[in-house]
Image (cartoon, rainbow, N blue to C red; front, side):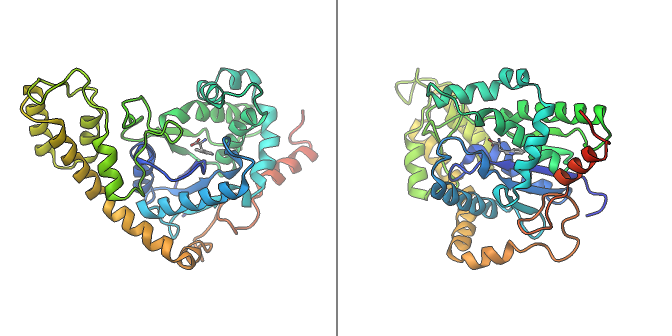
Length: 341
Ligand code: TRP
């Protein structure tokens, strides 16, 4: 582990993960595991839409863990952390909230959009505390790199600001983490809306069965200006072709379909059938691994044991690792006058 730079990244457990998560983040995470000391966090303190339903949050934690294992995140090599099992994340959130100006949160576009989506008159204070908690997640491990979806970049900026302020005011405790966005920063939904998301109901999940994938692809939004298969069609901005570009490794087939679509010599049905086939080929091994882990929770548990050696060498790693030291460290520095004010 020595010498490797660190990654901390995470996801809020709101249900199973979809193709947008994969192309925007997970694919990247899997590859980064060999080069970085990685910590993958399931941020169950930070769920907003049904925070009062603990059973549901627990269930979603499990779904996320299964999806992670299914795509090839490897707890033997990286650490999986369930946030609420390390309450020091909450403790550090409180310390660090003194270093984050409220104005920065009020201007944060991701946060604004989420509050609007929440839609109720009274917004819980947690909408302002959870981004600070995300800052604490990242700084707890002193991570260098945070690979995330595009929508998370404003939160990484908050983290950098807190690190700078803290380091300037006291001493160099935190690296300033960089954000890293995956191959497809934002995947459109099957309905053509800008973003694939659970709440918009326009997602294809990693665990969807082949029949469900076929049906979802069949219903996909395509080129609305094209009425007959003989009309020349638009490839650019057409979600079906966007997905072909991302998930169909047969480049020749894709090029051929595009050429014929532009000429008006292929119907939507064929283009969609080929897409569904490509998606199912991509998803098959993921579904298979998922089913294997789901069928043997004991095996999952075993794989969750803390790594025997070369293991956690930094704070906040591993669900049963020694308690993270950082919040205590900060309170000690405060008490000893290293930090004041
Ligand atoms: N807020 C992120 C999301 O909505 C999840 C998250 C929590 C996270 N803590 C993090 C991401 C730390 C990166 C780093 O998906």
